[in-house]
Image 1 (tube, helix red, strand yellow):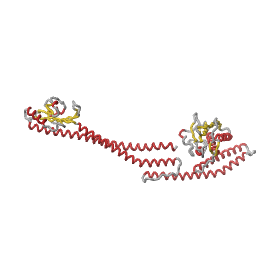
Image 2 (tube, rainbow, N blue to C red):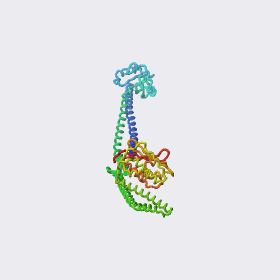
Image 3 (cartoon, rainbow, N blue to C red):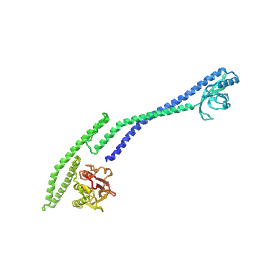
Image 4 (tube, helix red, strand yellow):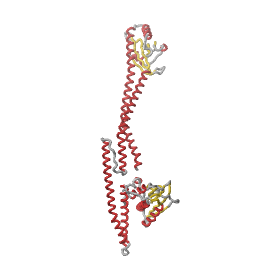
Length: 480
């Protein structure tokens, strides 16, 4: 059972780490995401705004300069525009256009081919109608390039619009800068998240590793290793947990020792009076002058005294197993022959209470190294359980086989079986489940330990069609 619980323990630990990481990292991720988005939006917006403000300022200043020198003649306006484009120093970065009141390009610093074209963007019409500087951002209809255009109206002294001066610049560099800003923000955010993950993992290691150690020790204590202690490495809550666990382990060890000593003492004290009761009961049963009714009472006394004696022997075996004094007198033996002798003897004891059906193996079984007396004790325990739980006229089918170098003994009864939730616990000491049958609850526990001492296994399962199947496997020639 301890092996089955270990994977579940690891799963629980991983689950704790996952829950911690999810709960903490989710919040931090959202915070980093919001900060990254806000920073990216602000930074990219500032880049665009800087370009826009620069163009607006430049367009406003240039338009004001022109208005101071423009007369009412269109020719002077045209000549001035031509001379300004010829002397325009930023032609490699910005396209300077002069546009008439119809929205057509008169001249451009970018190319002469642009003359006569109609851009048709809102900044031009807006500047003409409102007589104010207008900005437009979008895609160039011809090239698809991302551009920004600023149109500033130029007017005569009486306020009449004579044309529009338009600055057009590519946003390629700005877009590239914005992409770098976004990638930089994403990189910083990812680095921050990685740092947080590493810090969380380091912190979790200081919590989960001690918890795993404490849980493993607690599992050993739960499996019966009372007195096991864990070293205290921390002076915080984990250290307090270790102290509590150590204190519990010591108290359980003392209680277990006191229980074992008490059981051993009581069992020894009971053996003498039980032997006297059994002996005098058998003596009285041989008295020919004893009335029949009294004889039946004496037989009941003898039967119950024998049952108590068997229980006392099991308790003594249990205490020997607990304190390590349990040993086997191992010899080379024939398990099938010992089983046949046990079946013959038990048939006489049962007197028809349970039908024993023996199905021996067709082939001779290999010899094993074992203790005949202890194995017979195991057989009797199984027979007793079958008789106890079988209905009147019940059956117990016993079979033997040699499988993969093991001697296999199977005992199949037709009783009520064992509830599935109790199958893993029926071999635990003093466990009786929901059964109301009489017994100490240690017969199967002692039998299981005896088989383990032989290097084998004893498995209980529910048989098909009802009843319980006990399967014993003992390695052939296992040295003990």
